[in-house]
Amino acid sequence: MPPYRSRLFLATKTSARDRDGAWRDLEQSLKRLKTDRLDLWQLHHVSFQAELDQIFSAKGAIKAIEEAKEQKIIRFSGITGHHEPAIIVAGLERYPFDTTLISLNAAEKHHPRSFVTSALPVAKAKNIGVIAMKIPAYGKLFQNGVLDGMHQAMGYTLSLPGVHCCVIAAESVKQLEENFKVAQAFKPLNTTEMAALEKRTAAAWQENTFFRQWT
Image 1 (cartoon, helix red, strand yellow):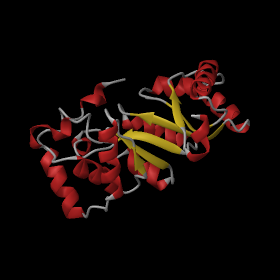
Image 2: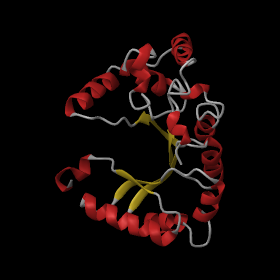
Image 3: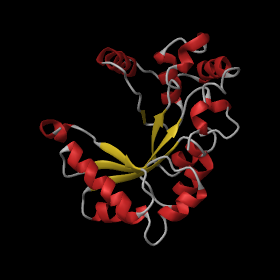
């Protein structure tokens, strides 16, 4: 990492909800990454109101974020979640996070508690950076002819108003290079194209939003 550090926007996360636990995670991350600073540090997979209450308590993880930012160890702070959009909305309403990392894809739009229709508009209104995840639903969107490929999965998500970027896991260098080419060729889809992809996922949204059960 050190030789490339100045060329990277480096982000990581903590699942700790208390100040001391979050600091331990941060120190471990800095050590593992061989750096003295992060560009973005995120509170990971926040799913329940009780977690928010702990995070914002007198000894909560938000204290670690504020202390680390004051010490210039981190530049930005974020909150992430793939389970309950209402909790992410509550977090965004409660604290001026710089970013949010949330599940956004063409199938997720059909979920009865959709990040697309609830959390995304709030983040956009507050000018919060939105990082999309679960773009191809771990590849399930490419099974059984739901979508044709990454150009449709990534194209849909990046065309959603308020989305700034996305993160997609790659199982090989070849797959990473292919995803990079799709990103380079990206052009925003129009409303007709978006609606067509949503129609294709309408009958398969449940099996493609399985991660919404995770906490």
